[in-house]
Length: 152
Image 1 (cartoon, rainbow, N blue to C red):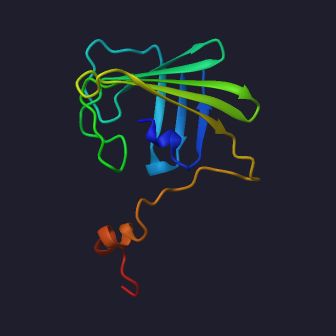
Image 2: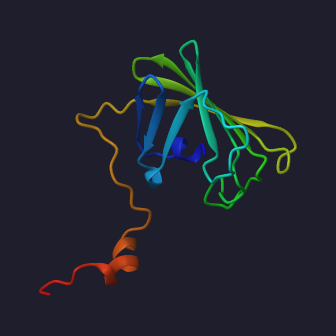
């Protein structure tokens, strides 16, 4: 979902000859853009089927085959299993990308809609993607009984 890209958390892009991986700090999410490896009838998934390709210097990410189990935002805006997301990442300089996303879901929206924004490279020394905690103290609250008890 585009939400991981526009949230104020860093992400890091890795590229190999076959894949582009975007590792997001937000919610520990990642997106693996497989170059042209489309299955005939993919299983529906919360993250959809992600296929990317290059058009000049623009990475185009095409995401289909979503199930209907995720929200666009914390307000609960939803989508159907017909959701089609197209993202475009275009460099505009050494430290910036132009990010454009088109949302198309004919079961929910009357027409496709777009968002567009600049994304800037973090220039902090030793900047990195950190571990994300959704709610402070949630891990001890949920898993506290499974932790090793002190002195035992």
